[in-house]
Image (cartoon, rainbow, N blue to C red; front, side, top):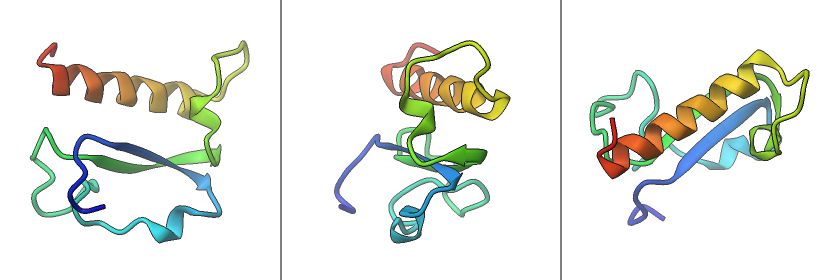
Length: 83
């Protein structure tokens, strides 16, 4: 919903459902208005399947999965004012 705020949408590059999420009201890298630190965020995670970043960490996780998790934590910290 366009009324939703502060939602994270990491989209795996191999995500079969990613086409349904549009750029409004979400922050897409490179999108005008991306500087709104409080807006929901969407980004593509390379070489990752749908939801792979939401699984518990295990040895051998892809670097892109680990990075996605860091972006998610950083986003939540920013929203909470815990830079």
